[in-house]
Length: 117
Image 1 (cartoon, rainbow, N blue to C red):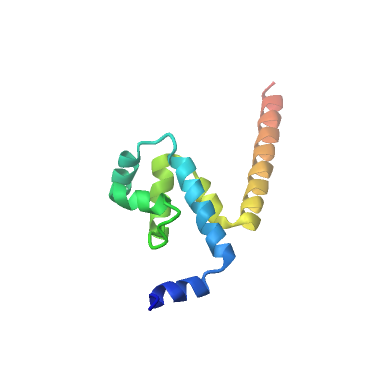
Image 2: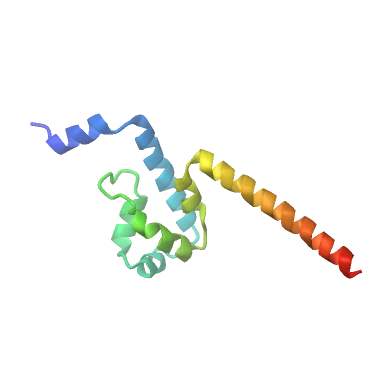
């Protein structure tokens, strides 16, 4: 007889969720590519085995917990995971806001330099 939990998981898991899980694993791998995984795991307060489980696409029971997002991003020195979790619409709004802020700051610096001269 099939495992009931596996049947329930399969029936409730949408293709989008599977795709999202694959994308998340790929992002974690990319962020860890040039890092020492043992150091990252230690800094996050988890074992190397737990970290590797989060990165492995085939380990469906190992899910990256939301409470570890901040420590992961600080440890690897990247906000890529935070931006990924925003989703495409909010991420594009964030990038637009960052672009506007950068343009505004550039104009402000130019105005400040002109005033001083």
